[in-house]
Image (cartoon, rainbow, N blue to C red; front, top):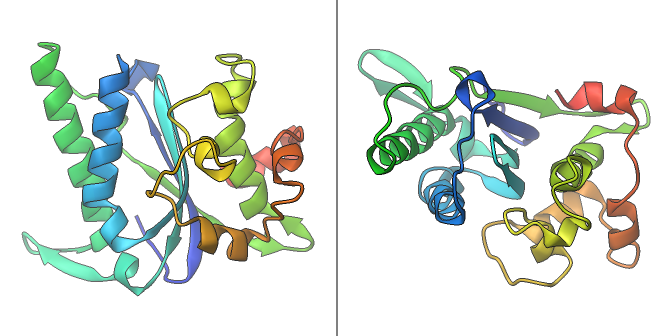
Length: 196
């Protein structure tokens, strides 16, 4: 996983064989605690959504994120090590709790760099896509009904501290006056291809 400082990234992974990774609310809360422990010290988290069988994060990488450390003779980025620790400790906890064995996640977590180019605002599209995920999957009637997403924080229904909302507003040109309406805009399939 190559991370370049001062860039935005869409980070995502899903359950092995598309299986569930969050079986109950407590699992998702535990995962968020682990994100705060293993990822938040080394990047700025701008958005997240935990779905039953996958997760999405939008992060802003800085010099902390791209820092390289040596581990077992290999060079690995601090962020990649954080992802490894997040997924492995969470998987171990789930395996113990539910008396299961084997891989919980697919092997390679994706980190897609989001670049503004030729008038296309892929970071803004990705930000909305992350929040629209449970709504698009028809798991809720309104995006704010999904508990495991940063959308509630952005619309003021919860005072979460995991996401850096001020930085998101600056980097994504968020306009609070029309934020709610813009969040529900349908994203065309061709634009979605650029965030994967």
